[in-house]
Length: 114
Length: 116
Image (cartoon, rainbow over all chains, first blue to last red; front, side, top):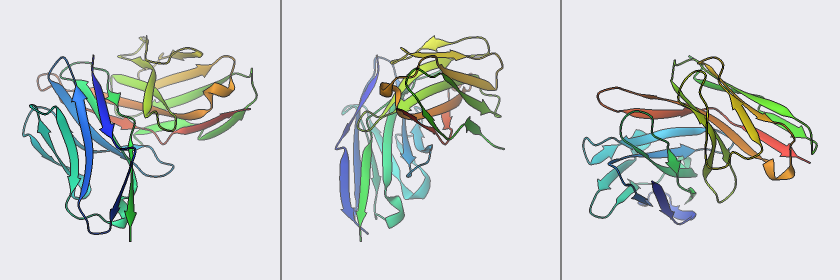
């Protein structure tokens, strides 16, 4: 069984400040991990993914995440928040290879304060 | 390249009515999924398909049926709509590369369904 836990359903940061969205996972097999972003009234868009290559993964819009096996974490960061980063972010996990169900976290809404 | 297209985008149903949501993908993906999104609950998997002619239950399948008669289409049916099925429904499709196991899911824009 696999699951992800996103800490904090709402996060507020000032424009220009560091963005840190937390995700911890549980998986009985080597995981693939994803961060998706959802802008209002839109579908989900892939930000980045970890598929057992480099542990530090860079994504679109300046976001990155680091896979830490010892901490079972895959936190999403961005050095400097922009107003356009305001959205809901979802962490997700699946197993490696073939068909593996993707399990999503409950989401974190990011508010950027001018 | 349209990606994943959902039809309709909005719908209001009366309790007890039936309807079908259509999902179409043009990326030749094997896997397709239906999720529902409710505030504070993330995305919950309703049903999924690992290939043409196959379907399987997800986390919250009750009250829904699906069919995958063609590889590019995945239909979600509500036989007798209930207010508890008021939600935003997302369809997704994904690939999985043999050898590397690389995978990625692509989502439609969602269908906002209200059952009154």
